[in-house]
Image 1 (cartoon, rainbow, N blue to C red):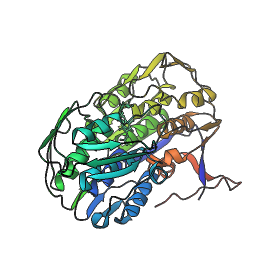
Image 2: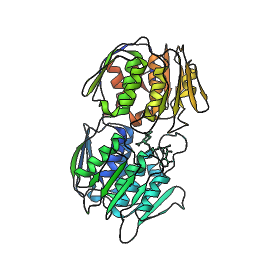
Image 3: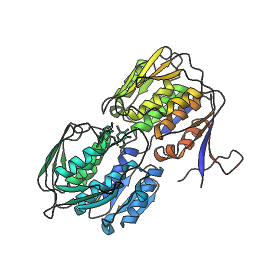
Image 4: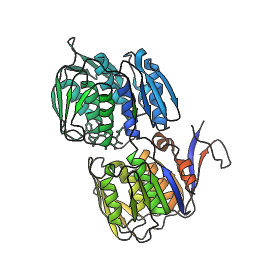
Length: 434
Ligand code: UD1
């Protein structure tokens, strides 16, 4: 099916409740992690997003048996083999790099194509490679599309690894490779994102011995085997943050369910600084109607700092605020694909020395825009809901990579939004998968 446009008639007030799905950045690591087990692993709360379907496809090619229904994904890894996974098979998503760590950890060898995913500027994997080498693997990338990893005949050996930069992907990948290595591996300057804790929880429930996740020093005591388990995925804090931005932008009382405050502290405190009125409960947040929002400055940092993945959604919300504000993305300087599109919608926004600068007033008007990556797409959805008139978003495949049933969820809140098949001349609402 060719579903590649989202059409929004903006300016409608949203009310009601929306429930956040399982975290995309967790599931894309939990699925590769599951092959380390010698028995089936059951994952609950799995979002129905295209990245999950792409990973199911890769796992099946590797020999896993999969069952996926109603958010429950069973992965039986007993038939998995370390067959070469060239780029063509896996370059649609960045998280395919987790197969490097998982296959290396399980079989001591892996041939995996270099990752794809959202284009946010240069996204090297040198730290992943540094970690694999420290564990004793030979790494060659003589064919520039493919990485060949092979442990010495005696297997991987634990090591102390200092991460030159805080990297989510490298921290998880090294964990995956090290869970069965001999001895105690220490990852220093580790990333502390909630998704890393989620992956370690799964691994520990499989029998691994991973300690210190959520701090910047992770210790992994190698074990010889890992068994099956059942695991419930944490809520997606980025999806939650996106709905909170939407609720603050166009809500007349919206409750976001299945959201954990402790995963979003820096974001919520930024919303409070803007003057967004919220009632925060144990696992839900109600955003009250907002009128006078203040412009604020935002700088992204590794967790628990302000998440780079929420920089783009909050940019659109800030266009409702009064004053002048600057956004600096210290993680991905080139994460600016949403800016020219917001400009075309009438935003007073520009880039000065890698700073995104916004000045009020901003009256957004719907037009044709293009999603350059997943969160840029989310930013355009927020803007389209705020804008007068019709916004047509192209390249929505990016959005469907990470947002579970977003059109359905927004429709339930009262939005006039439709996912459209470009082959169809009329605007037709297409039932999303699942
Ligand atoms: C993950 C998230 C992504 C999020 C990002 C930062 C997944 C699937 N994706 O991406 O949504 O935006 O964290 O929170 O979880 N770096 C290097 N060398 C490396 C690895 C990273 O220089 O080997 C740099 C990157 O270019 C970037 C920074 O480190 O500037 C952080 O990247 P990293 O945390 O690794 O991002 P990802 O894991 O790819």
